[in-house]
Amino acid sequence: AQTVTQSQPEMSVQEAETVTLSCTYDTSESNYYLFWYKQPPSRQMILVIRQEAYKQQNATENRFSVNFQKAAKSFSLKISDSQLGDTAMYFCAFMKGTSGSRLTFGEGTQLTVNP
Amino acid sequence: DGGITQSPKYLFRKEGQNVTLSCEQNLNHDAMYWYRQDPGQGLRLIYYSQIVNDFQKGDIAEGYSVSREKKESFPLTVTSAQKNPTAFYLCASSNPGTGSYEQYFGPGTRLTVT
Image (tube, rainbow over all chains, first blue to last red; front, side, top):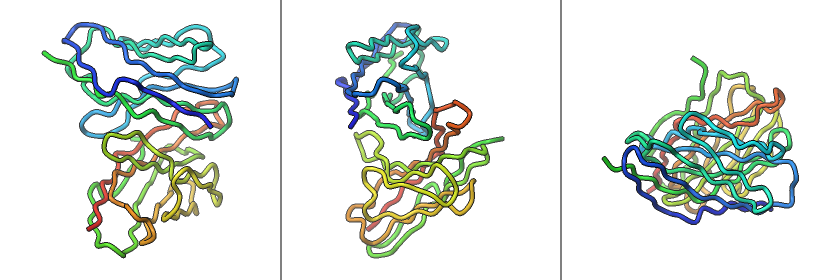
């Protein structure tokens, strides 16, 4: 079974600064996907970024980027130029590379962006 | 607009009553999922369905039941056998047949059982 670990229950950052959220996972699969989801106070789950395990290049989406270290089974999220609207719970999630497969979530990191 | 709707947003029930949570999607997605979220925890999978008239148990299926009679609908029934039903419930869908594995979530239903 796959496990996802987020070791930082809470983090804070000043507006406009950069912050990195950590995620490690454990799997014996070779084909899989990794995701970061954001859950703001509205509780709507929003996809932030995805990474395919077979791709060596780290995914980026505007101010969000990942550092994917496959051998170390590490998948951290970097948020640049933090904005107040980035305040949310962030979840790392793993999915086997099988059609219609389920997501396994970490326990989340509560990020607070301070003005 | 395409999306996933869950109704109602807040639901209150007495202990011992069954309750059904609605999930509808107009994204034409094949796969649908139900997750449970408890305070300070990540999401845990209850049931999922990859195709109409078929579904599989997730990690915490006991005390829950589902049906998938239509592609766009995946209702979840919380039965009286569920020992601790108060939680936030999220429905999601995806279309893996197109090579897109992301799951898209509805706004959730907060269920309180007293």
